[in-house]
Length: 295
Image (cartoon, rainbow, N blue to C red; front, side):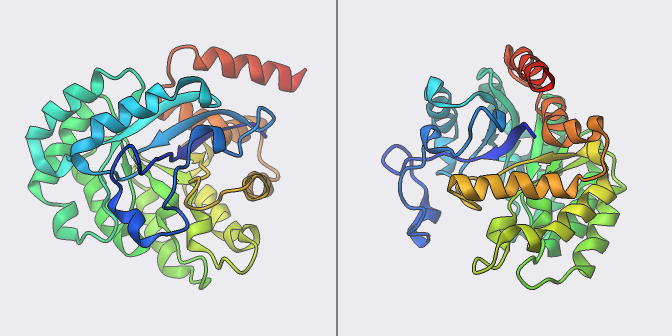
């Protein structure tokens, strides 16, 4: 199965400041496009998602990532940082981002923020500005925030929301009911799609990720449907090496057993291509790759 990897990070602490890396020694080093475990056999293109550098470096991050050029397998789109919670004033930030042709979405981390932050009038005003700009909004939250995100989706119906990492389910513990209930309610909001990604970070690292994640992936597919799901590796946070990357692809294929060809293509690439409005030339490259795969 060939995929558009909808959630990839790269960073270099010598170029930009990432305060969170200080508490993550295994990740506190450069991770660059040439280090990606992608191969032409399984990856059509990648979507870069902001890596939480210092807020005032958001434009520098976009320019740096774009400038890495041919070291990417194919860079299809960028999800940049934007201070959405600043309300209407985010429009100026969005104007600058829209001058960068690869920017197709924005993200401000909501993880561990309480409901009063997610539903603050300024956050909702900023969300409306993102929608008016024609950009998607990546929402990175935990299971306990699913209700708040559902209310947020109701109050910003014109905004295309992309739920990162299946809402970070408690995979390591195997707890399922609360997460499933929250996802079922969120799935009723038509402006929300989901990334099947990030399972490695939420699983028990002493056991293979695939079998742990499979029930959550299947439930996500069941609740949202193939045309509202996309695959993402969350490299290098959730996985690093080629074996782990291939395990993720294989797990997704297992979850899609019995799906139609069109459903498989939606999950592997179609949803990401639609939501992030792939960069010029990428669509043609993917069409050619699909043709070669079928031949």
